[in-house]
Image 1: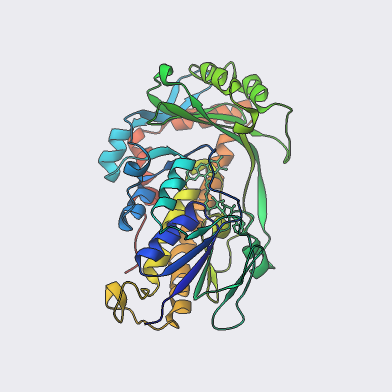
Image 2: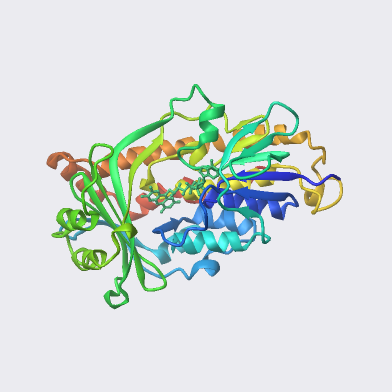
Length: 404
Ligand SMILES: Cc1cc2nc3c(=O)[nH]c(=O)nc-3n(C[C@H](O)[C@H](O)[C@H](O)COP(=O)(O)OP(=O)(O)OC[C@H]3O[C@@H](n4cnc5c(N)ncnc54)[C@H](O)[C@@H]3O)c2cc1C
């Protein structure tokens, strides 16, 4: 059987997971990443049970790779501190078989990269185009020789140049009306036993303890796109400095960070679903395919699900061996790649679009600015029994399935 070669554009969470999953199915994989090197700074990311289960199926133990899950209370608070709703990681573990974890992003992507054979990732290699006119797409890069491939995975993020090139009629991105700040702070002395998101009027502040004693903080505010202050640390203190404990103490730590370590991103989503998640032998995944508001903490989780499902549907590569590869029931013809990609669209498009729309709805609730509307929202959340609220997450957290 000829060796099958996949080129992955982008070494984010989605691209790296796809590379691992394809490698484990016997494909030869090259990852082209525009950035000159692996990220060493960055914020945190929450990995929900659905993503952890997807990673399990390809043998990646994210918890072991990046620290341990820590038992905490988790829920939503008001700016004065009252809990509107709360549960615990133990309840989540009991319901979903595995508790969500939060990890420093650079450590998580480093752990994913370490699961690939040395030399798989080419940093400083921006993909400029994919010529898919023939039977074997040719990946053009800024840095080096063209790369012929049997499959191209477009994991090039929310602004995906490949999405814009291959879906020219798509309306692109939609500004969600909010900006978000993220930071990691060292504060082992604070011993905060809760993962919380606090809602004010048009502003939110999230606190997530990490197992290494640090805290992943995020905050959002309703502002016109492109609004930037001279010093994000001072702006955060001004906006959230009077909110409940331990937010002021955490903002003190933010004040000690290098200004560059406070990340700020305006929030965008894909304005409409892509008509399909593939084109010829190119498959889109993650933010490139379905960028969504971060309110459910599912953008990266869905990228992981995409990657695992995609590799599962593709024919096995030669290293897995034998006609049909590991599964035995797959034809080994390279020509089954387009059919596998059509099956990938069928398996993933509706789920990811439903999550995108749901994340948008949750974001709108969190961004309410009118005092009466915010008060009614808080009342409704407070009146919803925790078990009912958790049940509402079942389709997300239990929704990862490998197509049969
Ligand atoms: C404030 C905020 C909080 C979030 N919190 C969570 C959370 O808790 N949980 C969660 O699951 N998700 C969360 N998300 C969403 C999550 O960050 C994204 O959904 C996720 O990073 C998408 O992964 P990706 O691999 O698709 O894209 P990216 O992580 O954006 O990776 C794309 C990669 O492609 C590279 N690239 C771009 N163009 C090219 C090119 N031409 N050639 C080569 N490489 C290229 C980029 O440099 C980048 O490395 C959050 C998002 C935000 C903004």
